[in-house]
Amino acid sequence: MTQDNLVVCTKCGVVNRLPPGRNSADAKCGKCGALLFSGLPQDIDAANFDRQVGRGSLPVLVDVWAPWCGPCKMMAPAYEAAAKTLEPHIRLVKLNSDKEQAVAARLAVRGIPTMILFHRQHEIARISGAMGTSQIVNWVRSHVPTGGN
Image (tube, rainbow, N blue to C red):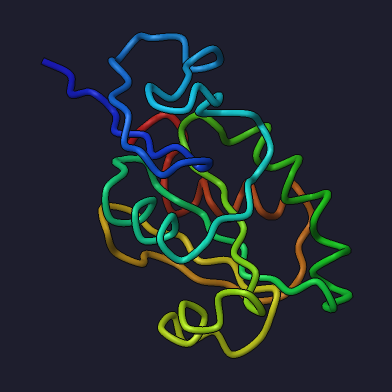
């Protein structure tokens, strides 16, 4: 028997059950009604970060960035394009290190942009520096096969 995916809403932080075989493109949050997968990485706060990593069953790719960071701005379109490719098998989110300094410190982020890949509540990979879309997708797939969790 295949287990339901637990998908955390990026808007309200509620955990939603997504049965296997369900079309995730139209799946909505049971509480706030937001699409669970929009194809765009959402900026999240500390509480939502903890829920994404701690409660969701999907691998989570976090882009730690800041608004003043030139390489972060350059990588943003590539990260968005990677979300269109990797969702719904991988959750892509963004964490503003200026707004969420405590989380960035807890994650021991030394430079930005930094991408950290989590799965089953554990960090499984980390990389720093701006990357293109195919580099991001290939890097994620080298650590977590898309389609499996």
